[in-house]
Length: 167
Image 1: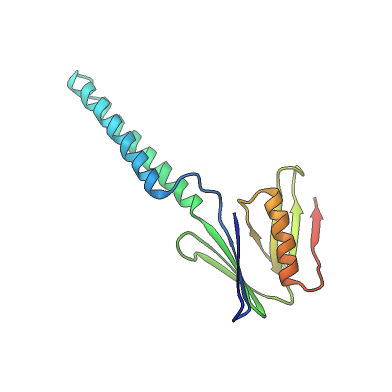
Image 2: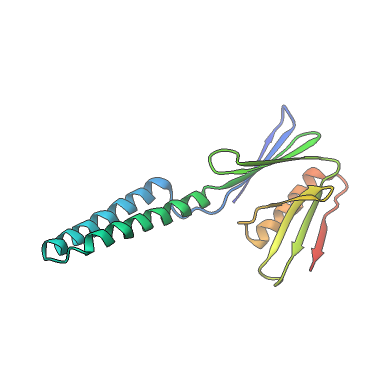
């Protein structure tokens, strides 16, 4: 998902890139608690029937499920913010806080769409200058990347230069 934001007072433009989220955090926690509840009920009944080895494996299984759900949820809460001011373009990546940040001079920036491998599957949108490029929107679809490249091209570069690289 692409969110465009513009501040008319400070001439600051902000583009927020967010992956599609199929589930929110509170619903994910409810799902995990429900699965744990059903599984502990079954494991307790089997333990009383004499199958005591079920209980340790239940604990390992729920631990693995919780770790997997947490890792997946952390991945879908990643976001990228592109802040465009008069002279500087800042790209910030992270989940809930900025983990990585890059700054480029607006007048030297190049926007590049690269096809690597199969044309239909892998399209990379790169922003950078002087050999230092950052991939933007790796989680976006091909059409979203193309529309974002056109929008960035219109906002950043007044002459309308968009470089497309075919490999």
